[in-house]
Image 1 (cartoon, rainbow, N blue to C red):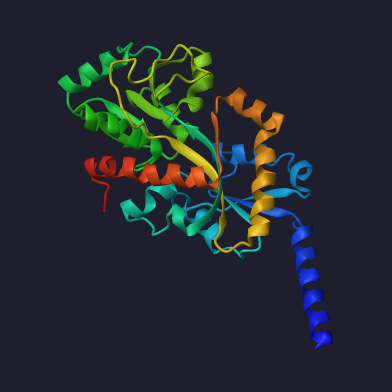
Image 2 (cartoon, helix red, strand yellow):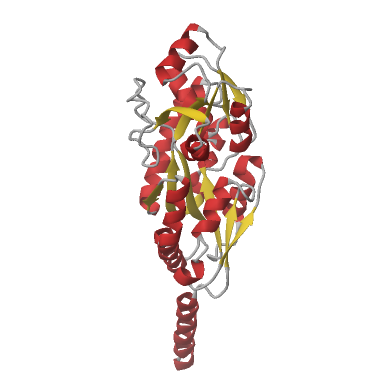
Length: 316
């Protein structure tokens, strides 16, 4: 009996030691979008100094395809040992209602929200429209004539513009492109009249005076664009703006001890001055929420998106 008791104590000691030593090897951060894109760039900036904050390196691995569903699915199916973390993005809010995938945020152990990005409606430098009201007035008088470029049906920027159109009975001719770069190129080349993108994505063009940003779809002005009005300030209030978002998550059933280590370690990376300076430089608004706050945000996002998806025929 004493031997059995001793064995139990020994096993508990070993188990505690294992958890206390976590992590003992590098961690993988799965990014569901291609290398060099905005999400990938943010991920790499976040983990640049990971070893200072969690004791090991965090290596970014890009797993692309399926509008992000493949990479996020890889995180969902990963071994729940804490050595795989996933960067999850806006698509997770639309896959199921659009019938693209059964994945939702409920399939993951949420760690934290990283950022929220608001959409901008942007026209070319020589556009006939100098304000959002100019654009809306023309579009209402000419249904379907105004071409509006975006990054794909059901993506944040498409739905942001669509929500405005639904609310104010404006019919745009939506033109999808494969990412932010070709969308911006289409505007500069005169192939579309207006684009909906993340406001941070047009920062360099704005600074170079190559475009006119008519409004930002947010409740408050963007700190990097203090002269750009919100939709409400431009005369077209939207109570619940569609916001793009990025966050961190784990597969289900990672031991609580390890979840705690990862949550605190990634929070320290988030607070790292070099990461925050980078995000300020490129115009990204950082928004931290812990796992509970992140869950509340995502649950509310579903409620906001459902009527918009229905109005543009994407709700399945």
